Image (cartoon, rainbow, N blue to C red):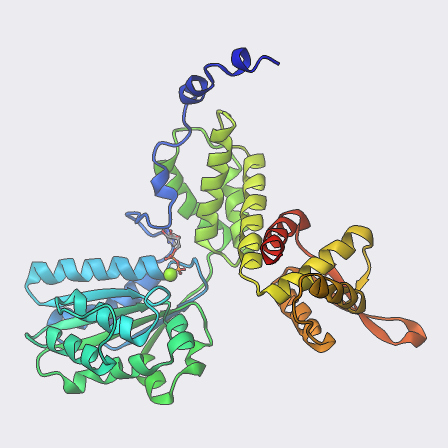
Length: 398
Ligand code: ADP
Ligand code: MG
């Protein structure tokens, strides 16, 4: 093959392809659409709870629950924007501050972020947290106003740093002269209040709103609205959106997943120069996203779990019926080869159960007649990508 003649002008030909997207940003998570289909009830509920702020009264604290991708963040941000706009219009002072506790995940950082958003100067680290708390208090108390504090992913904060900061914030009103604080807590975990001190729990959960998962039909409506902005006219085959919606509905009604599917399907189609997005592209997008998710999980596993999983993959390449005992034997050999401490069979069994919970493999207890019972293990995900990830790490260990 003469590379020169075959590929000369390759970039021109790529650039000449008609793009399928008109505004891909509309499919990103960060994009804020003008309408939020199927969330009227939740929007109204939250607006009713926060409305007293506009009359100079203190709204109740609220807890919002729901699985990921059910619109909790976008609805809360939308309501806060509306709240502030109205407060400016009618001249009643209301502020709203949004904190994502997955990123801002310690007491210090949450308080510092709140204080800074009201103009206080707090160093990145180094002060006692009491001092940061006071800085926040002083910064808001210089005039009469209502401050709505949104603590998104609040369950992460509690798991990582305890409920101490939430306790402080729920008590702050008794220490303020002019300002009043209301808290909107958002959690993906429905059981998270069981980790809270009962006083925090009762004051934070004055009001509760539950966001239920979207069904396939609702996801279709959400996707159609975004697809209209994102894609050029008639580039989506008829069943592309329903298929994205169906896949995401199976994945606990996650709108984020639905949007990802549509975007990745579009990217695959565009990359191969297709003039339409087809169902086949959606299926491939689904596989790609799943593989990316699994890869992400595997990458973050501890080394010992990676070795157990690796033993399992090597064994499965030869034989489909694998037992815990066999995995353990091979695991021990690998540990020796890489000079890693060998865990007990009991611990390795636990690791196998953890991998089961993560959905990477499944286990089944089988009876071996008079030899007793054993656990049979089966890989539940494609092994090729995982193997490469683990081998990369093993290479480093060497
Ligand atoms: P959660 O906070 O519950 O995990 P998000 O509010 O972040 O979910 O929503 C996930 C994605 O789905 C965002 O990109 C958001 O724009 C979109 N989304 C969720 N609900 C709707 C809706 N009703 N209408 C339009 N887009 C939505
Ligand atoms: Mg969210």
